[in-house]
Image 1: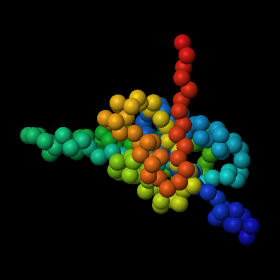
Image 2 (image 1 turned 90 degrees about the vertical axis):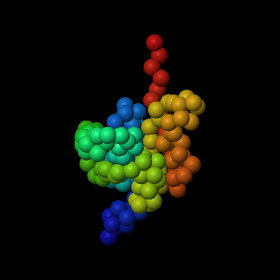
Image 3 (image 1 turned 60 degrees about the vertical axis):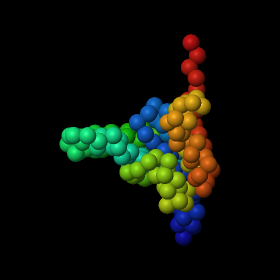
Image 4 (image 1 turned 120 degrees about the horizontal axis):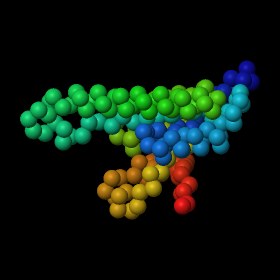
Length: 164
C-alpha cells in the first residue's frame, strides 16, 4: 500500500525535445541532475514531449501545392520519429527506463503547455537556443512562451558557452 502512495504522489516532470542539440543537452542535463543512475525510485515521473510541427502554409500555395504536402508531411514524420527514438536512447543510456515519450502534432508552445495540464506537471524543462532579442521576436521563443503561459515551474537549460 505504501508503494502505491509514493507512486501516486510522484511529481511529473515534462521535458521538451526537438531535433536540436540544445534540447538534447537539456534532456541529458535533466537526467543527470534529477534522475540518479540506478535509482529504483526517482523523485519525478518523466514525460518527454516532442511537438511535430505542421507543414508550412506556403507549401500549399501555387500549382503543385497539393503534391508537395504529402512529401513535407512524410519528412516531418521521419524527423519526429528520429527525435522520439533519440529521446528513448538517451534515457536508456542514463538507465532511466520509466519514461513516457509522446509525439504530439502542433505548435510546440501550445503542445508543451497542454502537456503540462494533461500530466499535471510540476515542472517543465526546455532547452534554450540562445537567440538574441531580434531573432526571438521574429521566430518566437518556445521557452519564453512557456515561461509565461505554462501553469508550472519552467526550467530553461542553457548549454555552457564554449570558450576558444
